[in-house]
Length: 82
Image 1 (cartoon, rainbow, N blue to C red):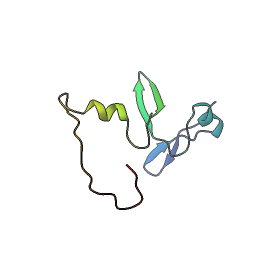
Image 2 (image 1 turned 135 degrees about the vertical axis):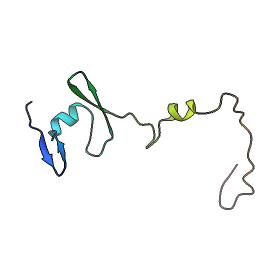
Image 3 (image 1 turned 135 degrees about the horizontal axis):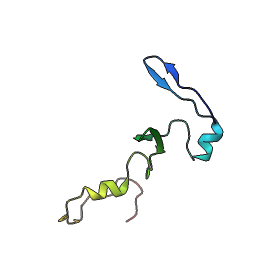
Image 4 (image 1 turned 90 degrees about the vertical axis):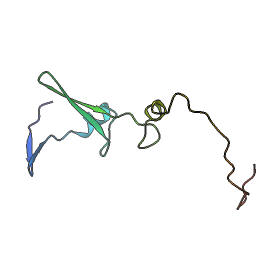
């Protein structure tokens, strides 16, 4: 597929046909990682787990000596069953 760089305000941009986005499993609004390798621009979808956070990345930031502890949240205030 051939396309042209276009000026959008003070920036430049490309438009991707729907078929290209579908083939790459991407949608409008998805976050992407843009990098340059040599003279090539690489656009990759950002892998997310449950919304805005990556669970593996969050767990990797936990201290190695972290110990789980029980928390008392008080008495039920609705129809909770424990």
